[in-house]
Length: 294
Image (cartoon, rainbow, N blue to C red; front, side, top):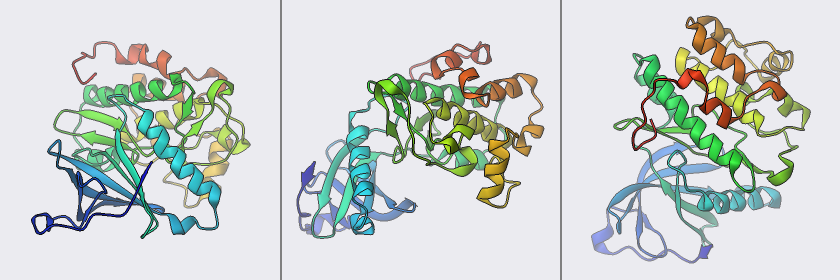
């Protein structure tokens, strides 16, 4: 991981508010998104001539939590090793000691996240939704078959990103990913409540939790409704999920084939198909493949 101070800006670079230590990447002031620990800005790779995303995490936010800092560093190390057309790529990482900021440059998707994209485009054929769903599965298969096995643990439509001009979908935000290796078992409770599989709350689970979350992503893509939005607090979501109840949005799914596919993903852990098995499901029959795997 490269550490160093930022280079001073030249007059020619005044449109950038910051440069990385190599001078290759320039950050603009435009914010693309902000979460609890991370801010993401629009940036530019001067060498390749492409737009990128500049992610910033303020390390002093975790000054009393070394385990969180360790997790952040393991996330970026992990991201750097991943290469798949349906995963957001990481290009560079460094720490700015003066500002106590962890910076990393990632690929940027032109159309933002899938949740916002789907809200914006309400008239989408089931064929197009299947193409998006298949690409998310391809990314999940890559994570689950990776050595060591990786569980995303926070898959939802706000962590999936779109290049809308080519219909390409990519999984991002691996901040909560668990590397479980041969055991395939993880034990900490983590994720977005409405998308968390029941067994996640029992603190012993496998990569099958991602399949459950994936099923809810498909449900949201079809209905344009966040699952369990009828629940007004986390306790109610927990009660419904652990009792095996389905989100009310399932009642809006009229196509029996779509409903059956989602139900497969929401089944009990041992009954859930793997990502590889789902990719072979008849649900995807008749989809053509091109260079973007859609």
